[in-house]
Length: 400
Image 1 (cartoon, rainbow, N blue to C red):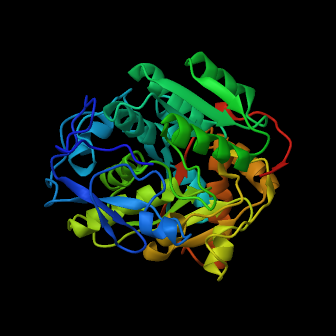
Image 2: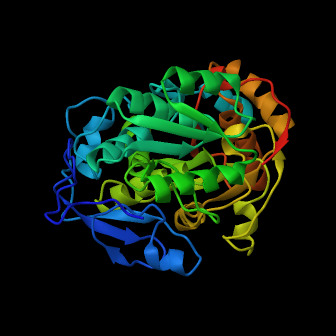
């Protein structure tokens, strides 16, 4: 199902402006060119071939060399599919050097990009602002997300601000912290027995009721909403502005890869615009081998279950976008252990960064990548802290 522009090219119920340079979308796998529309299931050709793949926007001409004077994500509106959107002040999060930590771990420089400083407390806000805007502009009756916590809390908050109905589908493992954030925002919280059942419930809402999906609902999966994921490019833009052009590697907590893909796309576009010479190596950090197995030859469409308490990066599936971001950047995947991550969360806090366990996993991953030689000790490294430690509760390790 697609809900897109009217025959005139103007979205029904339009309230915000599409970027005037947006001319269409293209598949990241097969390069099929597509008109401006909503592709909830990714590229139609790849979906039909049972190899779901995301789509990326195509723009006419290059964005200006300078950024806008607006604050937050708005500075980069010329690089995004929308030039205005529903906003709560997302973006412009701190990127801070941690020299004592770098000295302790034996690395030239470590920066931590603290996405926990976004309005709902995670990087998901850079996605939700654009996704909710798109749902409004096409006149959807409401927006729905399958979520383990952060994404649902974010969509619910932005939907509340926009005045659009919201449903969040979760499992009983959803933490009380996220339950409260979602329900206090006025969203309807729906529970499924297990993670994959969430997607089946969202599928029915999309196809039978016309709700606008903020997240994937396919199995095997594709990325989240293609208008929304574009917001994650702005992390790369901010990193270059704050750290400089000599970033050697970026470590990304990863489940289905929206974040690592968005960061890759940002660096790719900067390189194409001649603003950087190379793309930093991007490393997936995961709690059990999924992307690591695909990089070793397993199918992107396979199922790779495991056990973890790192709820933000659980999940048994892999997306094409995550693997493509790793391969195209010359990066890799590193698997971390829950116990080591718990230790490193405290280690980070003692250096001044109170991060969610799934974010602290990047420090654990860095240790392992340095020992393996995948990252040299002379490189400048960025750790993405996707959410803050206040989101964590003590939970039992679960299978996802």
